[in-house]
Amino acid sequence: QFQALRVPADRDTEPTVNHVNTLLTSIHDLNQKIVKNGAIATGTSDLEDKRDQALTDLSKLVDIKYFYRTDNSLTVYTSSGQMLLDNQPQLLSYSAASTTESWMTAASGQFGKISVAGGTTDLGPELVDGKLKALLDLRDKTIPDLQANIDQVSAQMRDALNQVHNTGTSLPNVAYSYQGTRVFATQGDVVPNAADTAAQLIFGGTTIGPAGYTSLAISANATSPWRSNFT
Image 1: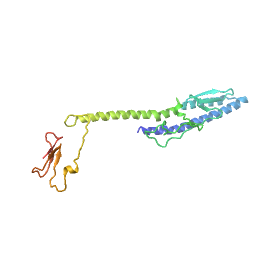
Image 2: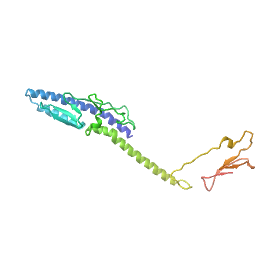
Image 3: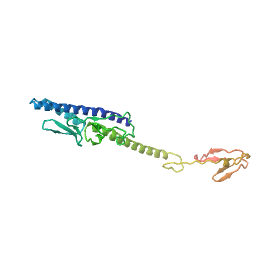
Image 4: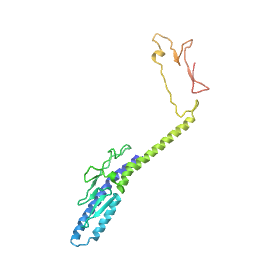
């Protein structure tokens, strides 16, 4: 059940990446308008307010830092130094997995990379804050760690219940666990050859011959039920 929670975390990563791209594109467009209006001495306050809001929204998704140029445009980077916006937006890409299993990890390549501008580097491990980081942590760390803790508690409960159950078993001495063996006689031990009309029973190294017996009965010992009587 816990593994099923990794599915929405992974699937929510894809639209979050798309939202990042939308904001980067919007900031880029506002940059161009601000530079143009500034060059012709047209007011840029409203445009800057919209850009500031887009930056605020972007910072909720990924950890960013930004710098202003002399023309009042700005560049955007992640906290790790990955460029997201310069002269053009560096768009992200990610494809959610079609299924999620307990053995799947991003480090082993079962989940796709968050690439920047079609590059091969995975942005995911570089993120330190924001919704995108939270989704990746939920998928790769929080849920797997919780599952591991529950598995450990379940194993401890299993062992404790088995130990209590063993204390209620019949004598002989109670053990933490029991291990039995079963040894079968070979065909030659049971019937030496086809001409024989009576079988011999070999028990504990002692041969019990017919000696007047025409049958062998096995029954539980009334005093010690775990023993068997041979008559």
